[in-house]
Image 1 (tube, rainbow, N blue to C red):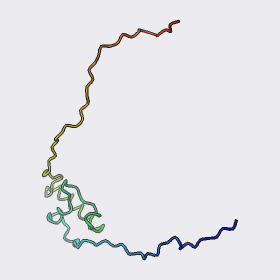
Image 2 (image 1 turned 90 degrees about the vertical axis):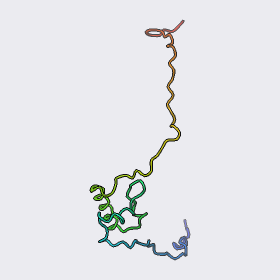
Image 3 (image 1 turned 30 degrees about the vertical axis):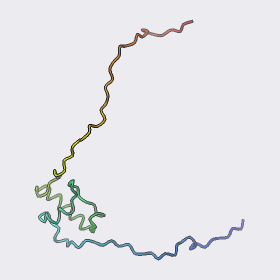
Image 4 (image 1 turned 120 degrees about the vertical axis):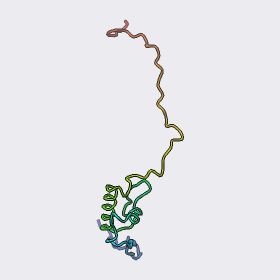
Length: 117
């Protein structure tokens, strides 16, 4: 079998690779502290969850400092664990399980059933 070998770079696209760099936040690491509530509250969602690094665009070191500062501030009661601003109300009740009405029990043959011949 004599197969022609295709050149490897035929499948590569001729596009130039662009370096991927996300813009990092300009927060100084010495400013991240549990007492700095104005700064820390920017990294908490409305439900009180800590936002991820993708959303906040922090470095790994900054994200660790922010999470530690948030947890310390919660323990010291400077920040709430949850925010009670949004209260959910049920408008329509969820699907209810219908209870079956019991009918009269059918008459069953007691013991073993026998075949009729």
